[in-house]
Amino acid sequence: ATDEVFVLAVAATFLPSYDIVSAVTGVGHFQLSKMASPVLIQTIDAADTNRFLRSHKTVGDESDDQYDDLDGDKSGSADDEEITFDVKIAKWRNYFEVWVKNGLTADDIYRDLRVGYYMTKYGRNLGKLSQREEYQKWVTFKVYLEQLKNANK
Image (cartoon, rainbow, N blue to C red; front, side, top):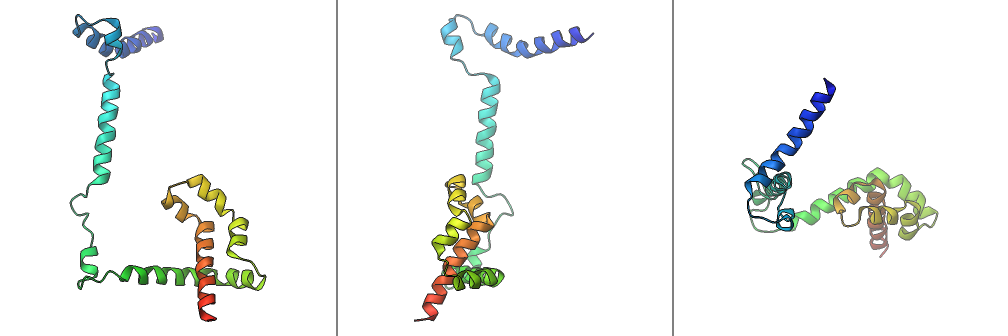
Protein backbone atom coordinates (compact mmCIF):
# COMPACT_ATOMS: atom_id res chain seq x y z
CA ALA A 1 0.00 0.00 0.00
CA THR A 2 2.84 2.42 0.77
CA ASP A 3 4.49 1.60 -2.57
CA GLU A 4 1.28 2.52 -4.37
CA VAL A 5 1.08 5.84 -2.51
CA PHE A 6 4.71 6.56 -3.35
CA VAL A 7 4.19 5.79 -7.04
CA LEU A 8 1.07 7.94 -7.05
CA ALA A 9 2.96 10.83 -5.42
CA VAL A 10 5.81 10.57 -7.94
CA ALA A 11 3.33 10.42 -10.83
CA ALA A 12 1.50 13.48 -9.51
CA THR A 13 4.79 15.33 -9.31
CA PHE A 14 5.77 14.61 -12.91
CA LEU A 15 2.30 14.86 -14.43
CA PRO A 16 2.20 18.69 -14.69
CA SER A 17 5.70 18.69 -16.22
CA TYR A 18 4.65 16.02 -18.74
CA ASP A 19 1.58 18.03 -19.75
CA ILE A 20 3.73 21.04 -20.54
CA VAL A 21 6.28 18.99 -22.47
CA SER A 22 3.62 17.13 -24.47
CA ALA A 23 1.81 20.39 -25.24
CA VAL A 24 4.93 21.85 -26.82
CA THR A 25 5.46 20.32 -30.25
CA GLY A 26 8.36 20.94 -32.56
CA VAL A 27 10.61 22.22 -29.79
CA GLY A 28 14.06 20.73 -29.43
CA HIS A 29 15.54 19.56 -26.13
CA PHE A 30 17.77 22.63 -25.95
CA GLN A 31 14.85 25.03 -26.37
CA LEU A 32 12.71 23.01 -23.97
CA SER A 33 15.34 23.32 -21.25
CA LYS A 34 15.10 27.11 -21.52
CA MET A 35 11.39 27.09 -20.64
CA ALA A 36 10.53 28.34 -17.18
CA SER A 37 9.00 25.96 -14.71
CA PRO A 38 5.39 26.78 -13.77
CA VAL A 39 6.42 26.55 -10.11
CA LEU A 40 9.15 29.12 -10.74
CA ILE A 41 6.70 31.41 -12.53
CA GLN A 42 4.26 31.19 -9.61
CA THR A 43 7.07 31.94 -7.16
CA ILE A 44 8.17 34.99 -9.13
CA ASP A 45 4.58 36.22 -9.38
CA ALA A 46 4.11 35.78 -5.62
CA ALA A 47 7.32 37.70 -4.91
CA ASP A 48 6.23 40.55 -7.18
CA THR A 49 2.83 40.66 -5.47
CA ASN A 50 4.43 40.82 -2.02
CA ARG A 51 6.76 43.57 -3.18
CA PHE A 52 3.77 45.46 -4.55
CA LEU A 53 1.89 45.09 -1.27
CA ARG A 54 4.84 46.33 0.77
CA SER A 55 5.49 49.33 -1.43
CA HIS A 56 1.97 50.76 -1.62
CA LYS A 57 -0.35 52.14 0.99
CA THR A 58 -3.52 50.27 1.71
CA VAL A 59 -6.87 51.69 2.66
CA GLY A 60 -6.70 52.98 6.22
CA ASP A 61 -2.90 53.23 6.09
CA GLU A 62 -2.94 56.97 5.96
CA SER A 63 -0.39 58.83 7.99
CA ASP A 64 -1.31 61.84 10.04
CA ASP A 65 2.00 63.53 9.14
CA GLN A 66 0.16 65.99 6.94
CA TYR A 67 -1.59 67.34 10.03
CA ASP A 68 1.50 67.61 12.26
CA ASP A 69 2.76 70.94 10.97
CA LEU A 70 -0.02 72.94 9.44
CA ASP A 71 2.19 76.00 8.99
CA GLY A 72 4.70 74.02 6.90
CA ASP A 73 7.47 74.16 9.51
CA LYS A 74 9.18 70.77 9.58
CA SER A 75 11.49 71.47 12.54
CA GLY A 76 9.36 69.29 14.85
CA SER A 77 11.30 66.18 13.89
CA ALA A 78 14.50 67.57 15.45
CA ASP A 79 12.59 68.29 18.65
CA ASP A 80 11.23 64.75 18.69
CA GLU A 81 14.75 63.37 18.25
CA GLU A 82 16.04 65.54 21.09
CA ILE A 83 13.26 64.34 23.40
CA THR A 84 14.09 60.73 22.49
CA PHE A 85 17.74 61.27 23.40
CA ASP A 86 16.77 62.99 26.65
CA VAL A 87 14.69 59.95 27.62
CA LYS A 88 17.52 57.57 26.75
CA ILE A 89 20.08 59.71 28.58
CA ALA A 90 17.87 59.62 31.68
CA LYS A 91 17.60 55.83 31.32
CA TRP A 92 21.37 55.29 31.15
CA ARG A 93 22.61 58.34 33.08
CA ASN A 94 24.25 56.23 35.81
CA TYR A 95 26.33 54.38 33.21
CA PHE A 96 27.29 57.59 31.44
CA GLU A 97 28.36 59.36 34.65
CA VAL A 98 30.58 56.45 35.65
CA TRP A 99 32.09 56.27 32.16
CA VAL A 100 32.87 59.99 32.14
CA LYS A 101 34.27 59.79 35.70
CA ASN A 102 36.56 56.96 34.56
CA GLY A 103 37.70 58.98 31.54
CA LEU A 104 36.15 56.72 28.91
CA THR A 105 35.57 58.17 25.44
CA ALA A 106 32.95 57.31 22.84
CA ASP A 107 35.61 55.24 21.05
CA ASP A 108 36.24 53.24 24.25
CA ILE A 109 32.54 52.52 24.62
CA TYR A 110 32.33 51.63 20.91
CA ARG A 111 34.94 48.92 21.50
CA ASP A 112 33.63 47.79 24.90
CA LEU A 113 30.06 47.35 23.66
CA ARG A 114 31.28 45.71 20.41
CA VAL A 115 29.32 48.18 18.29
CA GLY A 116 31.67 47.57 15.34
CA TYR A 117 30.71 43.90 15.34
CA TYR A 118 27.00 44.76 15.15
CA MET A 119 27.61 47.34 12.43
CA THR A 120 29.38 44.69 10.37
CA LYS A 121 26.77 42.04 11.17
CA TYR A 122 23.76 44.13 10.17
CA GLY A 123 25.53 46.00 7.37
CA ARG A 124 23.12 48.39 5.72
CA ASN A 125 20.12 47.24 7.75
CA LEU A 126 19.90 50.30 9.96
CA GLY A 127 16.53 49.18 11.32
CA LYS A 128 17.97 46.06 12.95
CA LEU A 129 21.14 47.83 14.01
CA SER A 130 19.25 50.64 15.71
CA GLN A 131 17.26 48.08 17.71
CA ARG A 132 20.41 46.80 19.41
CA GLU A 133 20.78 48.26 22.90
CA GLU A 134 24.55 48.38 22.52
CA TYR A 135 24.25 50.63 19.47
CA GLN A 136 21.59 52.81 21.11
CA LYS A 137 23.68 53.19 24.24
CA TRP A 138 26.79 54.18 22.26
CA VAL A 139 24.95 56.73 20.11
CA THR A 140 23.23 58.18 23.18
CA PHE A 141 26.56 58.38 25.02
CA LYS A 142 27.97 60.38 22.12
CA VAL A 143 25.03 62.80 22.41
CA TYR A 144 25.53 62.95 26.19
CA LEU A 145 29.21 63.84 25.72
CA GLU A 146 28.24 66.54 23.21
CA GLN A 147 25.74 67.98 25.70
CA LEU A 148 28.43 68.04 28.42
CA LYS A 149 30.84 69.78 26.06
CA ASN A 150 28.23 72.40 25.12
CA ALA A 151 27.29 72.95 28.78
CA ASN A 152 30.94 73.65 29.67
CA LYS A 153 31.32 76.36 27.01
